[in-house]
Length: 148
Length: 261
Image 1: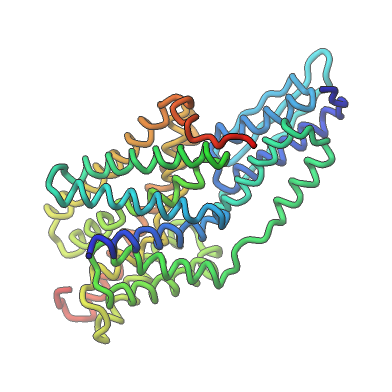
Image 2: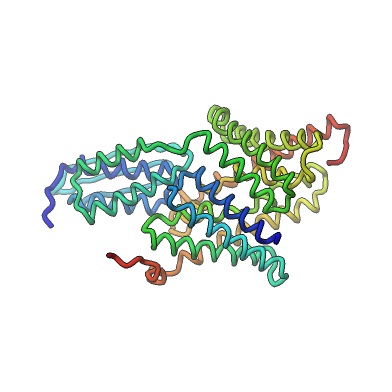
């Protein structure tokens, strides 16, 4: 039940940010789907204890980039359109907050810990994006719509 | 297909204009270069050379057979408008498929430039909804999300009205401090359950998603200078948000007489 609420929140939140970035309206459903799928993958992997937070971020980002490339080929539009908003739920915004919070409350050891985790999450996102963009274009040709 | 050979400098101007729109609105470097190259080639200009950075385009043309042309354009970073990137991308596709004339391309670019964006009211509302949703996502209760919604709305009004007049650093520190202040006030009025979650949700509209993602893409493509600049931009904003939150907490603790948050 809680998961269902989170998935809806991820989808709606992602669409809200795609609106701010000026994504054309017809692509909103894709953006919402990608954001929700990324969060779902992250939450499942992390909560089940299979992966650490960093590993879960990496795998969820891989899914987000794969879906973004897939839809970009299908809709013949720049992959940026889907990727930027889709990645939002995975960006370590909470990590930045906790780092600042522990720093000003003079708990430097905790601040270092969460700060380092935030950096690891960011590196995981970088690696995932770089890896998936190495895949050759032909893997995504399946996504192409047949020309009428 | 017979293409009437257009005036070379006009072609290069047009390519430059297309590149300008792309770069300004959040496209990757390779897309800018590719689109400019495509337009030039289609209209028969082969001697072009482009060098694209994250905030400027350098273009030259001309060899023994073609006229000489050189242009440098500085392109300040602005808020991303991905609909314009999509439109220019579509146009560059149509140039090849439908064989548009150079005048038609220029007209279309003019139209793209004046494409209306989402109204400010819609953007502010979206920022509130986004903050609320992300607050819930990161573990906040419904009451926390309502506060984050409110803070997201006020934050975006600030981003639209006040931040353009401030430097990047001060603007983002101010944004982080503003949402922290709003959340602390609401919390002390008895709204919301957990201050932390409220603030985490509310700072999300400040997160530099576009330079972060594009910076990574550029570095992956080998455009190191632009990628590094964009990533630096993103890191700077991340740091400023953290500083803004931290400053406001410190101020609050001073006034609240050292009370723990």
